[in-house]
Image (cartoon, rainbow, N blue to C red; front, top):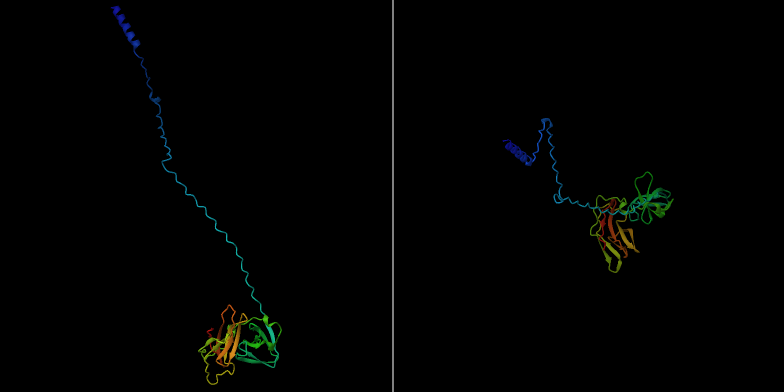
Length: 267
């Protein structure tokens, strides 16, 4: 009986020795419960080179510099000429002072020897002087050689035909049938013709009835000339060789003044 019990203990011991060891887990106290680990951050995947195409930068256009303007020479303003006003003294017994620079223009008044006038203008070549008495608002023309001047007539301001103060006729219209033609026997001569001005009794000025103002070529230069006529035609010398075209106009006089100018159809 004891033998059997002893064999039984040996058998139990042998089985126990051969059994695998078991790990004993000690219970953890509630207070020692480990704190939960924080959630692991999920790494944000970096975009691959093919995710979003990089924006291609538009090259900035380099402005082409504009040409620097070449400074131009500033024109120097022309100096306004300074003209003289002379003093003139009549050197003949009597002289006529007229509305225009020529004996063909109407008479305004006469002056005796020794009369003094201011000389305020001249024609282009200085053969006639535009004069005025001091304190008077009327001016008229005197032949330059009939006065003694205290200076050079060419230092006085030139006065052109459009500035002549010709009185206007209130009663008569312009001349009619004005024409012009080259002389077939002389190409440097122009014959100007017109119809007569028929005046009422008492309106005759008793002076030169017709006046032409012409700009014609003489010796290669343009000259202005006043021509008076008692007839209804006149020959005007007009040579060739000038770049500027010749021209002319005509008027008639009656005692109150001049008719309106008519342009001559220059050939």
